[in-house]
Length: 245
Image 1 (spheres, rainbow, N blue to C red):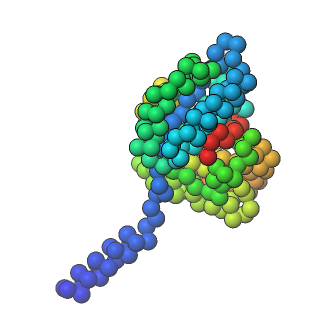
Image 2 (image 1 turned 90 degrees about the horizontal axis):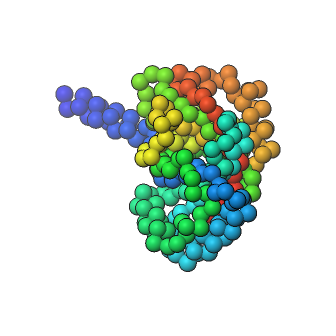
Image 3 (image 1 turned 60 degrees about the vertical axis):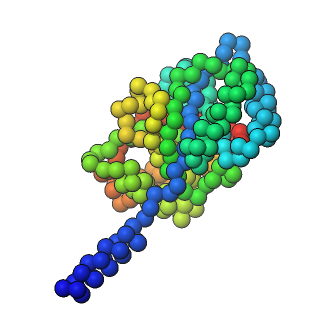
């Protein structure tokens, strides 16, 4: 009996040891906005210069940000830009918001009408970090996803990771993120369980990665298994600039 109990305990520990853990959570804020009347990217560039100078004077070293612009999105009106800020902890995100709110930065923000003011959690995978991106023109494709059966974010993450890992091994430069909206979720996203982002180093890599998906990845076993877990639609594509890393 003692031997049997030892075997059961060993198998339980082994199963736990070999089970993969989700990566550290990335905490993100999203602001999708329209430019004020008479304001353009020119005014935004000036605001970013001013904001970066202020950030340099703080100890908010763990906050990074990118600025996205719609490339393929219908209708094309309603969103001129999307600011995405990210930190490794909700504490750092909250600390940064508090410091920002204590300044006069917000009154100079040139795009005050925002249809999305949302907090989210992200899980990242793939061989690209923010520092690998073309700082002036990388590409992000977003898909909005629902579970096809009783499943978890963990199931979706590891199914997607197999697809991305295989693409990376084949030489494709790309990353992906599972995005879980938390607070401030807009009404048209509430029907979805999560968003899926594909991140590409630059415009050329985006084109090559899409070609590779349709020629070799679309009908693989990994893709079929992922399709059993979740399905996605309403994709949109943005180009982006790295504002702070």
